[in-house]
Image (cartoon, rainbow, N blue to C red; front, side):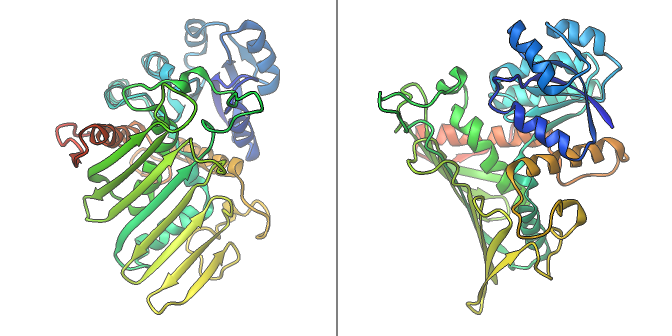
Length: 374
């Protein structure tokens, strides 16, 4: 088992229990230490939730005592705190697994990648939607040429968090850091990084230029909550993306569609174990986890239970942690298409910076070639 420390993810955390459940499914991770909250009471109570052997009350104490004892540290604190925390961990000799978004801007993300290289450390970022078996199946089919040359991809991720109110006109409880925007709007750091990552993962390409619009439509006055943009990929594929938190009736309406010269597909997160595909002859069929022609989703690692019992959000997280575990234990010269590092996170933030700039100029913006990733 790999020994990990946890930073953040306390009992009052929005994402802590999801990570705990994902880490627990395959029993590959030993929660050895933690600093779960700046609140001493919540920190102590959270140790019981995580069942960690040791817990600390300051980052400095955590780093000093845990050096050389852990395989990695998982960072689950709010995104605006990531840069300083991860920087200290890398310099302190730790590999890092970070909840998305890695940072609030491209420059900090790129800098963390450079620090990791300098100290021979690794940074992983948990873009968990790629953990769904059928998303991985679609990637395999696209790469195999199942749909011919892909011409366009559409990804949408509407939510209603910033628009739904109670009888008193109050919105749901929203973390304070999510109510303000940074160099890149927070809605892009929350949802846009997933949309971009899914696009990269499926088409195996990056964006050359984008044109976008950002709007404020919800109840949180200080924050952009709606983003729509077109992207031209370097291979010529057209991307059409929209996401936001002001779409009433959608808790998380993630949907992915792709269109190639000889076929197309559609996957919706609400039915994660199936997708529709169509051929050039007009045939349309439903593909599920019992399909006899699966390329990758039929692997035993994805079959935690028999087909017909839906793969869930937590299981997708667990798949990602299994990939990170494998990457830890295999030769450094090998590559794992299912793990993401600071480089991928930086690419997404670079593109989203261009999206944000385009919303101001109302023009196509090049994804800066001057910001070349190593």
